[in-house]
Length: 485
Image 1 (cartoon, rainbow, N blue to C red):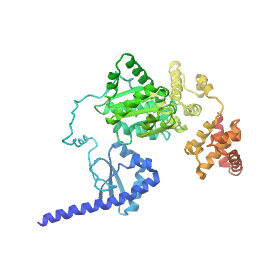
Image 2: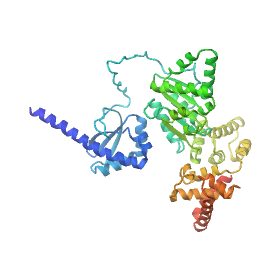
Image 3: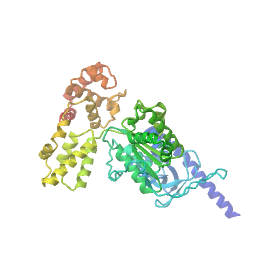
Image 4: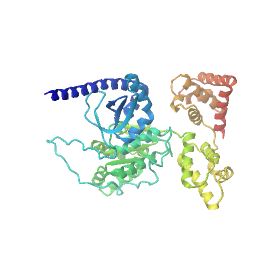
């Protein structure tokens, strides 16, 4: 009888500790939401579950290895600081991979650690009253009868990650590891030409095929339209629909091609609904966000925006250097650092064109057995470089200034007035006046429809600061030289 009471006391004590930890964790979650924002919290931190406390260390669980590594790298120190502030006895936070068990209290969940190499537990069976459909096992496959082949070079390992694309990369990895996750279906990737959207889509497909029994269909929106038209002409639309809606993952590239094609949009909308309702993953890319794709039906734009929307910004100088260094190292040809820097400064808008220029240099070096030099680069790439010797635009000035001061490009147009935002904006206004022929009112319209007097004040302010602060003046002159070369 005594042993029974002792067992009861141990269980009661464990439950009490879980309740206390749940309260602490709820407070920490509120602080994290306030610090990182609701969207970022839901994306990365909401899935954390609380484990046991041993001595001065608490264990937190995450459902995937990728999510654990991301949270450890981005938020590990902050989680440790918050737990120590909440519970001074806790001095360390350990992050592990585990599949969470049933939630036991608001803001906290019990989790049982599982070896990372172990097979995930089987999901709970459906209720007995519901019919259970057992599918025969199938191998991972690309539906070649429907889709374009995946490019073997485009994998996550060959994708160079930097600040402009890290969010899109992380979302793509999440979908590749756990397709149809809540909040990530559909995944909508958008950005300019040659920034890596197609690379990420192919990488998702490659990772899914390597991971297990899934069927993947990747195609451009143009091919989707032509397949649909072909099915109508051959009176095989039912077969086309059945084929497309039987895949586990459907990826459509360059969705903007469907603008103005109402019948194809209608078919894609119904395919989209059928796949999402069946728990299948959809990945879409376009050159603009769903809300900016005017010409798409409202119902389709709304559905596309209901999942995870991730943009890929224009590349920074550092990211372009990283891409060039990786490509040069893989080629085995020695490319001097000054050549890489020259290319990264000159070709800024398109990663595809940047890689093409480097490939051309490497091919020239291999064919003629000559070293890569700055002079040879200017000679071999004269046509490409000439095309990039264009007039400076206000958009380019805004992007360069935002990169230099590590601010968001959207701050150039926002109503925020904090010094960390206002000063770079004023510098961009000053450079726009110096390097373009635009008038004060025209410049103001490019900065969120600001009044021309605001632009005049910004230009004057920068001139005064340059006269007073040599370091600031040097920064502005450096930006001017970068924009002019």
